[in-house]
Image (cartoon, rainbow, N blue to C red; front, side, top):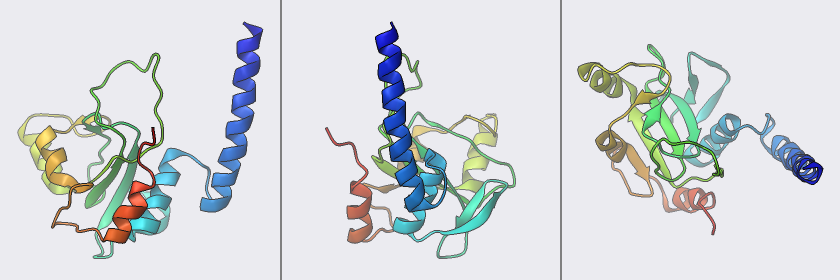
Length: 173
């Protein structure tokens, strides 16, 4: 048992070194939210605000307010804010049903990117009598319609260069 504790301590020291190197690059703590904001800003041209307010992380090039999320799995849920941003940008890992985390890992990968119109999303949730807030349930059809990567979407077209950069974060076997 003490060997397990030693191994975990060693791995945490290694992780702390990596997190420090990431923090030096992005100039924020190396948490998934900050990393996602930084990636979205660098690749998708989002102008980040200095301090997020009501879930607004920045603005798209067209001026719309945006909240950026990096979800290690696409489980069909989103944390939403009433009177929040105009759009939600979700960097997502592989599609997965919500389940226990026992015996699994959640690597920081980007398998798909979604751009949701917040007003349309809220209208859909209200029409279905669903709650708006933490872990709001979003229908699969809305995820599919909001996908901007890897499938192209005319609502938010990506350049080949943006697609290549996003592919750097995909799952590597």
